[in-house]
Length: 418
Image (cartoon, rainbow, N blue to C red; front, side, top):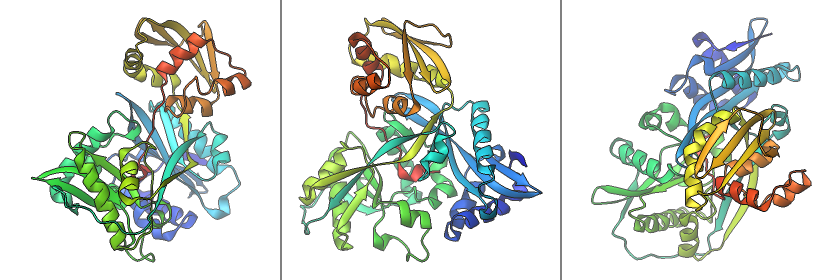
């Protein structure tokens, strides 16, 4: 058994492996990750070779994500596949161990993957993380007053620069969203995975909002559709708008509903933060109640706790200021998995060190740490669970830690799957 980086001459063999392990219909998607992703480098594609044959593969996509005003390096794990006749021999496990070592060597802070076999990846340090989906059952057709905004289909040649700007403005202070360059938008791979919007609302040449909306009449016949798009994508895949033009979001919500009515779609689904204004507008404009569901197909792994905390220092200090807690002081030694580092707060400043000293030990499993890191829960909300798990904190310590790790609504757009 040999584990190494892929070679250019092996792209077709790897694509064949992926089609055999998954579905032939996704061949263009798989191939585009090698040939049409400008961020791809050979060493990101890891292979297991047995007797001269590639029997297992994993890809680590190089991404960065926003965490408030900080940006951290994310390794997106995907295309994990083993030929059927070589399964249950430990090849995929060996590749996952290699992938972790590879990400450590390349300076990644976190890793993310999407799966339905969580127990397998838990063996290598990944932990599941919740994602919120919304559903809207449409109850009869509504009519709307004319708007000063014009709705039209997205045009890549004329719209992409504005769409990229809107995306950056809409997401730059969120937690968990991928940083997209304009080249990333233009890559053939991004087009293949359905990243481009379907409609925009425009006024006097300015695009105010956009949506990536997948409705039946927008797609090819199911026999020809990319199997991933057909299976995993909800109707509403992504949205963005200019905050200085909030009325454009009203126009967008009505445009989405009108398209649904025209195509006789009775159910709109999507993945948006629970309190995103578009979900509320869709409910109000349609007169239909929202429902929400939670799934945990996303899994994160901490690659370097100390590097992650170092990059978050500007965000930590901004959070202390926003919470009016710049007079607080304290030292917390975080122990997450087999990693350890100390976070010291001193009158509005934050320092991260690798030493093992600290008045307060904060020992967390990865699952709880991720909920805190991404704002799915605060230390105050997890206090009862923490006590059951053996972590007892004083009220002033909980207050300081809750300011450093406040409640939020993390978001990873579906079109950024790996």
